[in-house]
Amino acid sequence: MEHEAIYQLYSNVKSINENSDGSYTALDQDMNEVSIDMSAVNTKATELKNEADAEAQAKVDLKASAKAKLIAGEALTEDEANTIVL
Image (cartoon, rainbow, N blue to C red; front, side, top):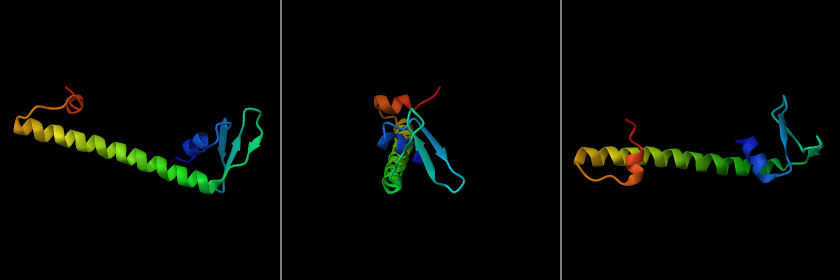
């Protein structure tokens, strides 16, 4: 998630290298190093992870809702129906 966070926070970054010590070197299109604030990067990475986790949980919940409605013989919403793979 750190790479994605860096790209979102620093639009001029075109390449990211992860160093052996776990730090990152961000480069622009001319291969010049871009100074990055790792505190901001970590905060953004946490935000992105939380969003991804929430989306994954929403899919699980939607499938569970669709299954419960099918078992009960109730009509599904279009989103619930889209979770069914035949």
